[in-house]
Amino acid sequence: MLSQSLLSGMRVLRTEARRNFGIVAPALNKASDPIQQLFLDKVREYKQKSAGGKLVDSNPDIERELKTELDRVAKQFGSDGKTDMLKFPEFQFPDVKVDPITQAPQ
Picture 1 (tube, rainbow, N blue to C red):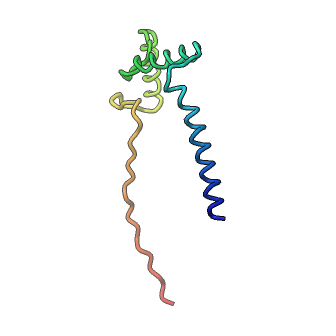
Picture 2: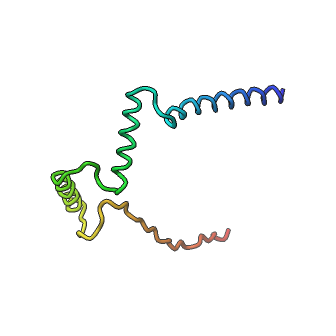
Picture 3: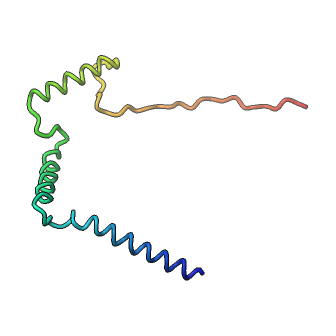
């Protein structure tokens, strides 16, 4: 019984490994379909353009619009102008002193 369940588990594992390799392998190799190749080329191009951490293919109008929106959000949420609104806030939870619980005499 144990050997039968082990064999069954091995078959499932082998099938899953084959499926996962079948899904990932085309992405690692050069695509045979021209549409797939175009998609992969665009993804690689976007990766190169986005390396600086700035907006990809932005122009001064888009940069101005981003600044306007960030200023609006800063005003709406009460920023003092020094706070970076693109950074995730850091929370501090101070330890609260709790009085020990004492049992009343019975």
